[in-house]
Image 1: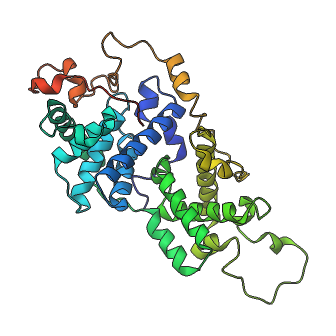
Image 2: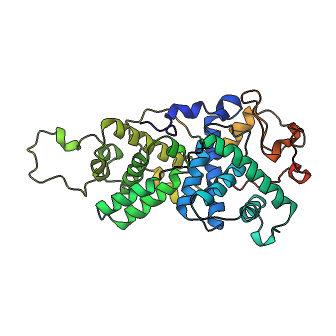
Image 3: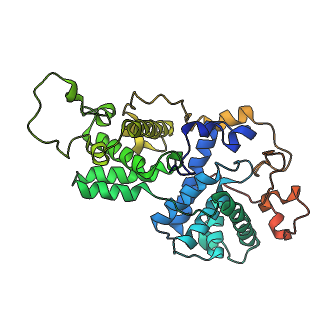
Length: 358
């Protein structure tokens, strides 16, 4: 049965953010990446287990398949995802503590300088709670979010590969949450993608290509040479594909996932992320024919500013109100000025000053 949370790649061109606003696909993916980065920083500062952060990141991506990024600021949604994950993943944190750390991240201050009883923290608590209401509705109260990391553990146990491959694959799986892979492919596809890419990175530029590693059959199978009398070795470059017994359709998905990850890495600003440079030198599979999704991150803000209209006076730090659906309810205090009938405390009507940290 197909999960309601696995979308075709083409759905990224039909999200509420793209369809109802000035957002491009590249800009939305850029902001999704920044939102997940903020989410990870927030979760790490709260001392949450990585499993809770991965669950929250999955919910973050699911949320924006049903709501526009112009209606809900990525940092508000990230904080609400984290707060909800602390409850479902049994690593509870007090709302005030989440709001306090979130306020520190937003303002760029040390958390010790944020007073837990300050009006800003009170306001942020309201933001998190009100956004959580919308989050629960968007998720249809479906909190299950399988992770590719569990599949990677099975791969690691099945074959004692070079520990560098394990470390690389684990890190790439972390990075996959900065892309929409978790809403495009099942965990096994993502795990295989991370493992194959890690193998290729560790084996070096003169090793088998990604096409050879994910081919439906070993490249030598078509050559007119006598068959080997040795059984297929599990340490071959095609280990992950053979381990799962993927069909041609599955392999096509792995090819697309690999190309998306490599495109994401290539979009990074190499001055700020020099560690990804080796991955950008890897050629993507030639079998992936999907449209380009990413633009260089250094160019994305300019792309948006060229297409966006000027915001109303006094709202430069706010998330603009979208006309999504004509009457989308704006449920966070950042938008209460447009809904005076809601009984929101005065402290919640102040605009949150944000540093562009993510």
